[in-house]
Length: 112
Length: 114
Image: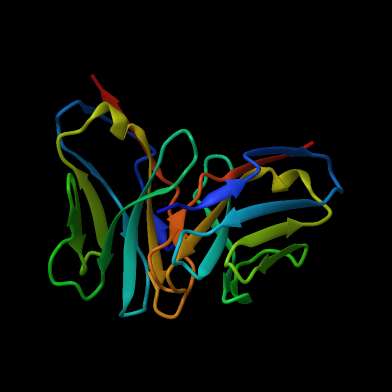
């Protein structure tokens, strides 16, 4: 059974640019949740996708957007990058929106 | 208000000893779930153990057990027979009824000493 995978592993961008992060869910999982983890902090919920629809959102501005595809993989897009967007971005998949979430290895984004 | 509080920024334990990592939570929801995750330096969050608020018994998974005291709103993680590979950040998290997201604490860094 393949676990949650994320790409890329690391990314460096400059302020104002746009970035797309990718996540493949674990086999049999139809729900993907995205979290941002700043240095020294616990992860913070960005949003969740269930059956290709946004199914809950945390306190993040609209420049954070996402997609889920028919195979349940997902993308996180961030527009107009700011220095504070530098963080580890974690994707988690689950069998349904309220089931245990299993995380991928994360994408470390650095904004210069 | 903080939903999850982890008051121990760092803990040290001798190899083969047991260690308790503290977690207190705050919710008015009668139904909720509590989780512990391990995050090694590689960054991946590894699910360890789950406790439902209505579960009568404390959860156990191998060397991990959860000391759940509902009246005190605490859900401490106990790791028995510590191993060098247990050195990592440990996060306590909660999900309330109807919520899809996890609320995480700030974590405890555990270091296992040989």
